[in-house]
Length: 476
Image (cartoon, rainbow, N blue to C red):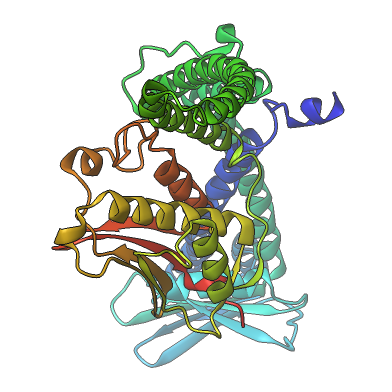
């Protein structure tokens, strides 16, 4: 119960938090980019205001022939309105100075030339003022109101820096408010359009995973025409397919269990009938002697069919258990079980190298080889003896860079067209009358469980199947 609760998505987690954080970070990053030029413009405007007072002072100096004759009260008001310690007016190579009664000699002087108005110079000047130490004096240089005139102001930098800090605090507060409002607005919009549908999809998948056989949990798609609408419709279709498949497999499993029980009892009954037929075959009655072989053959086919169905039902119950296995010895054992070793009419050629070792499930791979070798023997036994001079089954191995191929081939008549059209299809891919076609189906499943594939190779004469295994199964 705790695990299920921990997997349940919450609105204010995951995508929601990431979305809000991303919006705020992006807006603040944009504000930082906008803040520097804005701060530079604020500093330039502040300095321009001080220069205007300097220009007014320059006009006074132009109107008065003797600067020293100016009243001290007037010069103090000019300096106080500009916030300056001194004002210098330069024109035609001459300089005139207005300063405080008790001038202060500055230790550190920074120059702000307002005749240079490019954005880089203004921005660097603003940063220099913002991070400057206390006690610096600022020398402001600007053009006067007449041609070739220049005004300079000497003033403490501290008032400018304090106003810039206050301006920066206001910008930060406004930026945070804008970021918060924008984030909330965008979140509400994006939440309705994207996060809520994604949350609905996530909750549905988690719930359906817990009970895939509950049809009421199949998502009902909306009428959206965008990508989320496509995902909803595809998820609904997938869940419906899974629901139908699970029901079908459950019915097939129940049916298979019933068939297995019936098959087991039928096999025991057929075995008893086979024993009775063997006893009947010993009677001297001519009719019995003529019919007994057919009866024995029919019972053998029925027992073989029942055994094949049982083997197919339990073949892939567990995944293969890999272990280093010598393939040549495994082929010899499979050939012996398939009654090829010592066969009076069919030759067997084991071309597997002695040192070939693969990491495979020996029992399951032996099952594949047994099915293929048995099919080859039965095909050669059923073939016309005159058409094949030396019937033979051959095992060959080809080792490549990415795979190892084990070929099982015979020089018989080959597969009929009906068998080729239904290869590897259970109950339909048999090459002989009365066969179940389960051998190739089982062989393909086992090969695919090993990560390989079982391939039919078309050739002019005979039949050839290749067991292609990945190179990763080779034992070092």
